[in-house]
Image 1 (cartoon, rainbow, N blue to C red):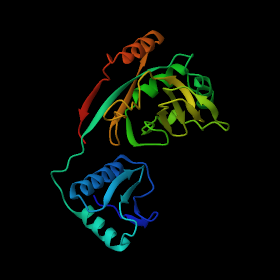
Image 2 (image 1 turned 90 degrees about the horizontal axis):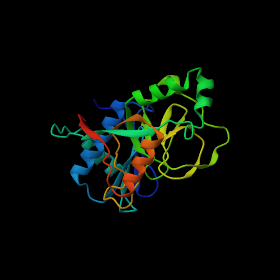
Image 3 (image 1 turned 30 degrees about the vertical axis):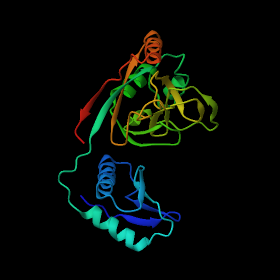
Length: 243
């Protein structure tokens, strides 16, 4: 399926390509497919391609690009058929401790949505989430697929300090803070996993198009996993899925 895309200049050496303003898996797949097509064509002067919920940013090495010429070239690539193209994705199983020591906003979500804390945990860990892109902090995964009964507005006043690994809900999204930072989302648990590790060839293990599913662990299991990670003896569970 081809969408009606818009192409806009975005600075001196970038072109912004936009899809319909919706957060939908089929739009994400089209964006990722277009990204792969562009990468496979090895178009001269393109040095980077970045994706978001419904857009793709093409970055050129040259400052003085011919906008119309490059847009026409991108349009040709988008319309081209490449039946051998396959987006490889993985489903990652992420351990989360929802204990009250971490889930400091479980009561808020429970009261706001009239749902028990036990059901919050069950519904949050039952869903399979899609990674749409990696955002404002290195390793912060923007996830789609949160159960609608868990939607909760962000806090009016953000916290100045949120612990690394905090699992939280903000509006219609859930996510994990990869490092200590300020933030306004509602915290429901903590994952001991490192979501951004500069010692790795690929610092963030997940990528756009991958899936995530959380599973509940105890406080003791949380501490054990942290200890195993420190000596590189914990293997994150994952499996290949159809792209």
